[in-house]
Image: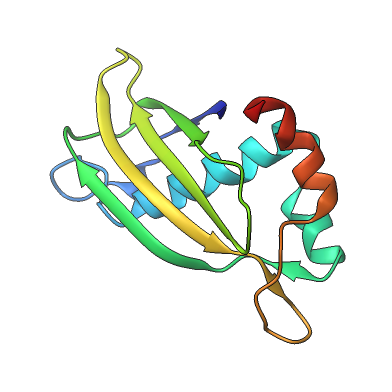
Length: 136
């Protein structure tokens, strides 16, 4: 299993009139967590795109447990529980506030897609090699 964490601070523009993070912003927080988790492996989305592979989101699930507020420092924990065997990768995500209270949980499913043909493909070998050590 691979886990990583990254932090973001809630900006004023991300909150509603109740000073609570607007629910749609969690998709962006999850994206930050996914991108940074791959970067922490020493790989980037940008390098994957340069290889001709894109990763569209095909499923997003989110459960809101507690609200986040303006200026909260959030920790996004991103977990890959299984090494992808085909074209699909699942990211499990949790968002905590600076008091370490769990605020939101979610799962995001993405596909590896050949940018030229728009057909499903497998994870780039370079990324697979970086992840394999976490699943032995």
